[in-house]
Length: 234
Length: 234
DNA sequence: CGCCGGATTGATCAGTTTCAAGGCATGTGG
DNA sequence: CCACATGCCTTGAAACTGATCAATCCGGCG
Image 1: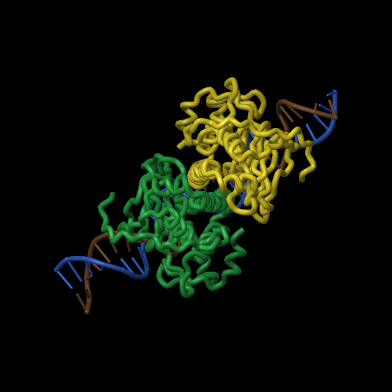
Image 2: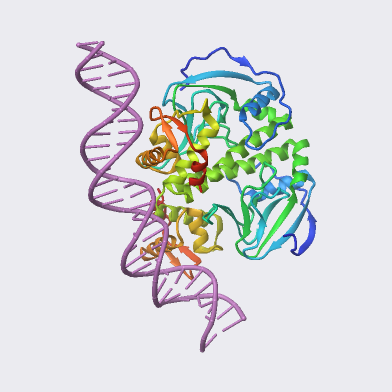
């Protein structure tokens, strides 16, 4: 697995962010703070499309932050059914498990570059620096919050509501210049929402027909009416 | 809400547990450690069946541990559809959110007694005591692990697989003397598994017919063949 | 003993999946 | 530069799982 180009390891910037809001705040700053507090070396690393970053059950060696690209983390059932727990986009931290081993598999969705720090370094820093410990907790709590919202979606929302929620989430997280460039395929979206790829496609087509969104290629979406989309979201 | 009988506040026992395994370990010990480290006053408090303990959006004033009874934590959609995120049984800690406000509602399933400590006291303790901070993180991480498993269940398992998983989880957590005494009704189970109460009932009836479980009253279940149940779980 | 909420069971319905075919981009090699 | 191969996406039709609607049934409790 560790066969990628290692770009020049860089020392994390020394700035300390002045206590930001912890409400679903961008994790970028938190990660920087952690790296700074820990005085830890952060390296960069690249993965090709569909390459595994770590596997379910493997020991937690590193904590990662997406620099460029996108990552999916998922669980599998014996027969191959897959549930994607989260998509990680530039700025997001992933791979931070409190236990000794990962409980999901992480794969690059597209060619992806990550920053990474040794988990043991963070642990050590957290053991002596309360601020670092608090950041680790906050990051994990952010993941829990997302999971709680997603359980509601998976257990109780209809297909159209799921897709509407997904679009609003992606709109919030990666719309640049009015255009949402989805890095993932329809199957990934389906496995994130607990749907088949066909159902996702049908819902998107319906939203297109209704003028709520526009396409420029299957993965380039423009939201034309966020209000109506929000109404479709339960 | 704070109108219950307050039984004699007790100072938490001063023993420090000798580092146990952190792998899904019973949270009982962790909570004791926190209370001890924090030097915090732990009070007891009781709630009647179906009484709200805290509501979605309320500030996080306390952290709770179930002493007796059972608690459900859930989210609602506008139209009343409900997703129960977790059942909290004796020993379990709940209500620990990293943010300032709760993101789920907690209700007593049956008459329930909890131990509680002020969240601010824990925060303060965590700010000066790394061990406490680590325990808070571990507790939150345990909740995240459960949520990740549950997302897989909600998104990708069939009705029968969901019910089998549920039974095995409850068997692990509350079977005493070979008998599983479920505190919750069929609707609660359905709202936990993303099913209707009828579907839950049908699955249980089918397992009964197949001799995999026995009833003594709708909520007293004996598992007669855990292996076959495990096979039904994906 | 009878009431009442919860549980079971049955019949039908609807939403989503499955199976299948075809279209549309992208990129590669002739 | 075009033809074709490939992967991804869309669309259609049929099948199926679980939901909904509707009676009972049962058991605990007043």
